[in-house]
Length: 454
Image 1: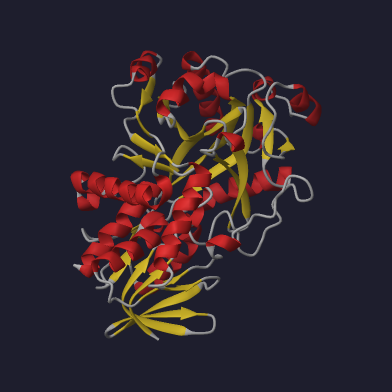
Image 2 (image 1 turned 180 degrees about the vertical axis):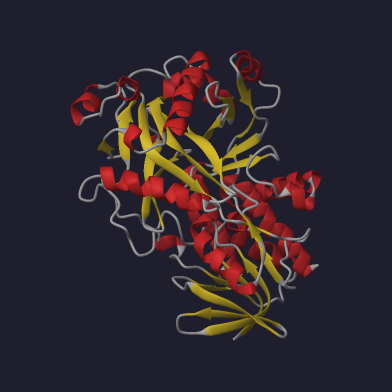
């Protein structure tokens, strides 16, 4: 079967490229191939009662399927060039922001209306952070919440499914170059297309590297982010989250001069498992509906590591640390901050007696046996720095879940159209290594669709 455009991956990049292609030219014959399930079939079996931890499903419903890894995230769209990727280096800062705002408009049209748009610009907390050797990055933040984000995706799928061929639970094994386009090889069938858009996200990083190697597409080493997810009473950060919701705060450590940053803040949220290529890591979600909110807030503290010579496999480094955590804890490990600084392993009794009720069933342990000293020292420094603007952060009962790892694809060499050296082959979203967020990935999808549709 031959298509005008085949999109590999039904994450935000793939969805918004499909949407924009149909809007621009509804005569285009388009197919979307997705290794995971359709939206209605995406259910994680962990229920906290019968199944309390990851059972390594063949296809992780948290990480793959329609909506991508962002489907069950807390639906934060950060409209900024200050973080979330380097899309602006390819298409320009003004156009990048314009496309992110365009994506925001679509989200509002398909179910996000009424959700709040926050802004850190001119915030009184910027001064407070600077006074305490912290840097609050500027951004506008649209928070949909996991529940509203799901509704938006449902509505977009209803809009697209009658116009586009979706192939779920259909991993693409190879992409081959033809004289007049591309051949997409799946386990049982092959398909042809004139233009191919690859949007496989972070979970497709290994596959993406293989494709680039086979097609002779140049790549460069990217970073890996390693750290922990912090969980504490929501009131500790409420004076910040009520006004800003998501605050990207960067701290430069005194000991090693490494940058430690907050990431993915979830007021009144929950901590969750993620399964990436068989490795169980930790993440956080939050909801817009008050009925689904908790008394806790969680956020990640991450340190970026980039390797070039002689070791270049940043993701491999992150995987080895995550596997060590899985080996010692049988999955995700949790430790009280007070136990960490005292150099002792947490146990169930001390956690149960604490003021923070965990929202994830994790194994009490000792993160100092998992995380490298340099990274752990930086995280401890950051917690004490945050305690100066949010007193209570460094309390003994603050919980640290480990490890949290953000894997990034090798950065693919693309031109100003996000096109590879092979005409008609585009790589977008987090799988390209140039976007690291919902808003940037979605914007890249719209951008490429406009290049194809004209």
